[in-house]
Amino acid sequence: MSYNLAIIPGDGIGPEQIEATLIVLDALQEKLGLKFKYSFLEAGDNCFKKYGIALPEETIKAIEKADATLKGPVGETAAEVIVKLRQLLDLYANLRPAKSYPYIPSLKPNIDLLIVRENTECLYKGFEYRINEGVAIGIRIITKKASLRIAQYAFKEASKRKLKVTAVHKSNVLKATCGLFAEACREISKKYPNIKYEEMYVDAAAMELIRSPEKFDVIVTTNMFGDILSDEAAQIVGGLGLAPSANIGFDKALFEPVHGAAFDIAGKNIANPTSMILSTKMMLEWLYEKNNDEKCLEGAKIIEKALILAFEKGYTTMDLGGKLSTKEMGLKIASIIKEIS
Image (cartoon, rainbow, N blue to C red; front, side, top):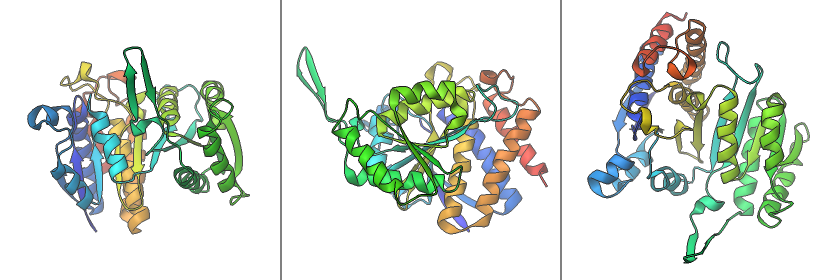
């Protein structure tokens, strides 16, 4: 099969990460006979400076036509780009895995968890208002519909993993909003008697991620809590340079690193491309599930295998103690892919 991929290089280190990642994807095409057509699109800070809009209509239309989207990080216009795309395309499930990899410093060697974050509502709806110079308010939106479907997604993912779901909320304080979310999770849990279900307050979950991260399998939570906890989870397995994510809807999906544009190192060709490359792995897994294309699943497995072999050989960027540039990392992984039998 042939896939049309929408590519948004983004801002800061985004273009460098995209360049390295496409080197890896091209190696996969050559090895497996996969066919990707790249459509390069503009969005983000640089786009805003050029056109006065961070997310042009042409970019939205191209994403809607594409089979999947790979997006680099954007800067100050993130709310106008990724938050808007999540809501426009109803990309309601944000998947953020955190996994210990061999040869990479990690808090513990056996971490393998997935944060399933509701992606369309909560405080990220953007309903904020300044009442006067001294008072501002933000309205938190939590609906039963969104809570049920993200809980359903979490249990579906857990059924393929270690059969455990932890719902994270703060219903002892946020009784209405988190209370509704917790009720929805409990309702869905009854449909999955084979999956262990537990609940945890968000502050306790933040602590437990440091103390016993290996005990988690799937964490399901609301939008802002998921954003914060996923950064913490990334740090315990080696940092944001290893943190991929997927934004998934009913028929569309967008894949991107968890981290931001890192303007302080942009243009230096030292950023770790692993987060983008692992996001590509997630994209291939999603394309497999959607199209039953075994080559995509094989490609996803090869990417992860090649990364582990690269780490074993000491092929890493500066953030992980190595000496490779962003592009060199991509070239090394591509070279390993070609050698894998």
